Image 1 (cartoon, rainbow, N blue to C red):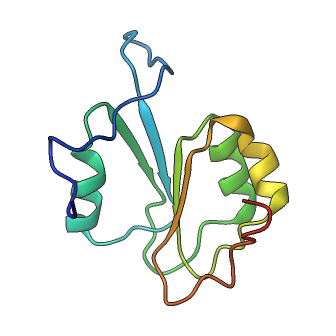
Image 2: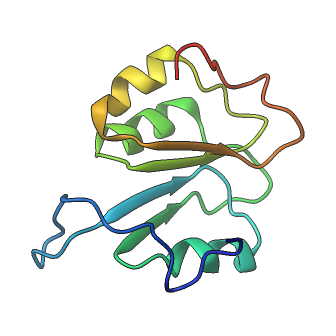
Length: 112
């Protein structure tokens, strides 16, 4: 059901944070409205990394750096080109690529 609730079936992965607990790491490529971020942060065990600028896109190199750190989910916008190169950097850990846009031409669905 949408919006995600505390009873959501999404749970943390086996990745551990510094305290040893499980983390579901989400990277958001733009500072989106707080109500949307709250839904992500409410996922039990989630860690949400948000690019702090509303007025510009996260640079591609920064997206690569974030994905290389380990990422379970990526929430991108129309300005972010999601292709095989980025997905290779993310490795096998990434489970979700979501876009907040009209259309998905910027996402290489074959690479997904």
